[in-house]
Length: 107
Image 1 (cartoon, rainbow, N blue to C red):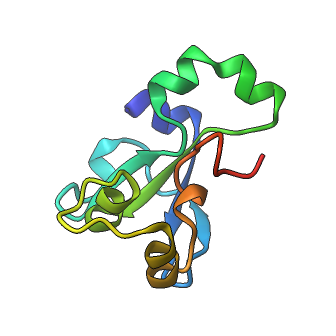
Image 2: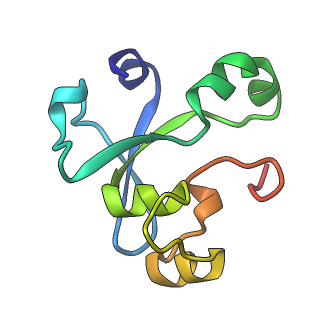
């Protein structure tokens, strides 16, 4: 993960539902792992396997610092998974702006 932190831009999800680039994370030691997860927009193995496909389409990999409960919702791993509509209403951002999906994401 430290290599990814050096290579990719890092964003944080604001309460307004916007992503804001941050510049104060240089390693995995720079954020609280009990509160946040550092999330790959494109799954790391997918990015590495198909990097040329993403680059041809102008799709950039990024890391997003997410509270753990939101990260679980993004990956449908929460105790009660929200629908896409519930997720967007609560967090003011589409799930598909946080995780790349060929069918749902805009590209």
